[in-house]
Image 1 (cartoon, rainbow, N blue to C red):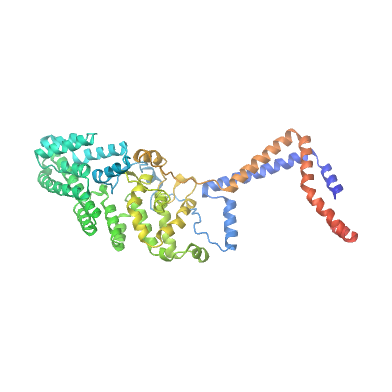
Image 2: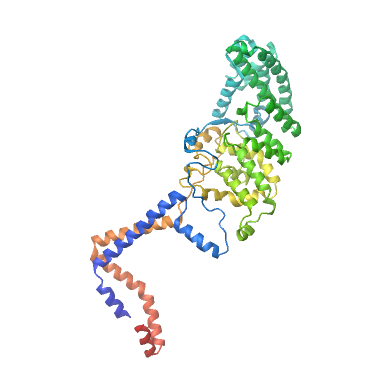
Length: 511
């Protein structure tokens, strides 16, 4: 056996080794190119996909998160490529469930010594206050003129002092608002001040309503008085919700939405959804979702995850991942999983907070949709609702990570929504305090077979280059390597030859 092996190796020329390594490098390079193309298009390795498709059924498993390869120009929400481009990537929104500075944010500072709000967040709030609570005709009313300056003050004490000064002149609704937001140390005290603001606000609203058609100045004043009245009623409803009078809060929110149906920028329906979930009135929650979960309206984590919660509620109490892998998913379970995938694709940061894999902080006053700030704001108020539905968090835990296997690679392409904005991390860093670690979009790692093929291609290419440059030396190394490789085989063959009869051994070697 040794003589035959030596004869075989001695007959090989350096050209053979050059051709062998060159061919191996070419083949591995072609495999790498194909794997990379397949991964860029479908988000998974072709070799891994074939392995899962053929081996997993033999092992009794079912892959419920197979990638969707439908890359049409119109996605499932009816959004076309042209509408995607028109979406503002990093628009900051007012948090519909923002807390009270005096009664909640300041209390956190007193206890922990940390500032829960960033300067950027508070500056955005100051701009909101100037936009909604002031107008060009404020100089006609002395109290409003004082408040116009108060909203621009950076010092909280200066703002509070200005509000008291305005109230000394007359009942000023915006002055009561400022005191309720920043000076009141309890929700009950804030509610008392908002009720006083409501009386003053309704009086100004009725007065400006009769004059709104007398000129642009009066129209601007009426628009400001409308904003003030809506803000007061909304905050009163939120006070009722915080004080446990949830049914009263629901009625106030419904009345406000009927009275001012066009003011959708305040997103009052998100407050209503949270209150209805607290009452476990899931039928009314579904009715609100049917109205606001529309392709023509902007999405939010509240909309997407509440829809997922309702779908999960139908199956979560009996859901078992082991049973689902054996028998496959039922129609209801598939609907729930798809709803979770939809929600996770919209905002991938929420599950870690709902599953308590990451600690919550107080939500900011402004949020970035699809960002970490929105995830915190949603989970802060809705975690209790997920816990209340038996098995909902378990279903979320078992399925949420499958979303990232469905989204085409690169991740910015999107699947159900417009592409995920790449600027969210920077914007969230401005909105969230420094002691909080900002969540980032989960990165899809390269499959093992792509890395293996890349390494194999590089290794064989290097061998081909060395063999071409030093054919004789590489031939010596190859012979030594093959001799070492076949040494155990020669040892086994020698043992077999010593055991078997000579006639039988000659017949085997002849074969």
